[in-house]
Image (cartoon, rainbow over all chains, first blue to last red):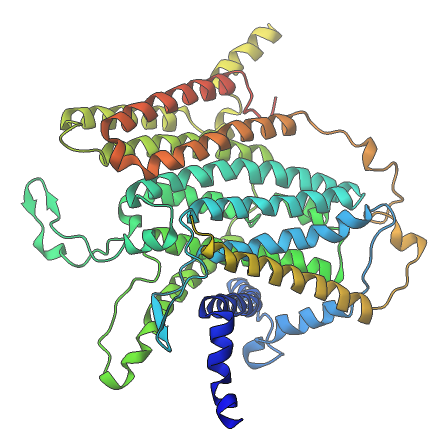
Length: 419
Length: 121
């Protein structure tokens, strides 16, 4: 009998299979950590913005007000579960779930660290290493638009409808730029798997040559992160990512000065909390993705460990990953505290007329630079660069609609019309 | 083809949906419920609503954006397999995608010049 109890864990593992147990543990762990992270990020945002505005911010509940968000969440549970009479019943109920679930799903392909060995089983610190990781991330991210559009439509009210239509147009416009900005990454890494992309960013740049001179002193200093050669793609990714999450300065869907609260005006209580949760998880997911794809993921300085605590080595990658992600979350908060909201036509102008062509041109440049040097001669490369440079110059010179208001050829049409 | 790596994602879908449904259920149990006619009307800053959302009209621009999105998003999906296989395709891949992007840029310039990307008329 006692033997049977002693062998029980082993028997259970044999019966269910270690893979299933590991997968379940990962899912529960990541889900729980994400919930706690959301609570911390909301607190973090309120404290940081308060600091930037010379206020105190939440400081009553727990040390430094850390439990404030938890208290808010519990309060929302006790609020009225309220549905307006004009609302479409089931769509109104489903919309918050549709907004929340995809945000969590996006986290499934983010590598949080290297791997640990538990009881002889190698456990990779990524929930699931899909071979189509980037594509999955984009696909799940774009599912979030359903929550927004269904919420706005199902509310049966004008402000939410306007907010959701605006939000849909904005999210789908910036999704193209987001997708195009990650194509060069797939090209350089030669894979869509996030684990492979992180692995491709290991090490440092060696043999740096400038005009035939070997810059020895830089050797081993510059990490082999994609941000070094792919910074234009990163800028496009960052702008499009902020617009995808409906955060300031692209928070027109919830512009409180004109639309009350945008698509979730009619929502209250725990359903409102779900939109909130979805938005913040999405912010963390975009930050984690920026760190993973452009800043080396969990790679970082790896200190020497004494033999006694060498088994704790797996903490170091997680530490670096967390630091990088928090830096991007801070950037999101900082932008919200600093920048005013964009006007809608300028928002569409940035997305369609700057980010999309910019991303397309950058794909061509990356493809040419990464081609086989024996097949594409240097002169051809220089020609491509010259053409791109000329296009960029013409682009910058053509200017900003804030100054010209209309495109030059349309201006001619207008003057012809009035004459 | 192995589907192993999709199992955690299935678990995550189930877990997060369960969490959402359970939260809504708990909240509907422990929260008060006191609807009044005024509370059930759509929120319009205190003014009595005039006409429902079915009478709302929207600029045709939004539909245009949706159509353009489909065109350009499909193009993005075409670019991914090319990007992954780029090292094997060599010069052929470069020229092929150059032609593809050139055709697409021509369409893009056409849309732009016809005013399809203009938000203010």
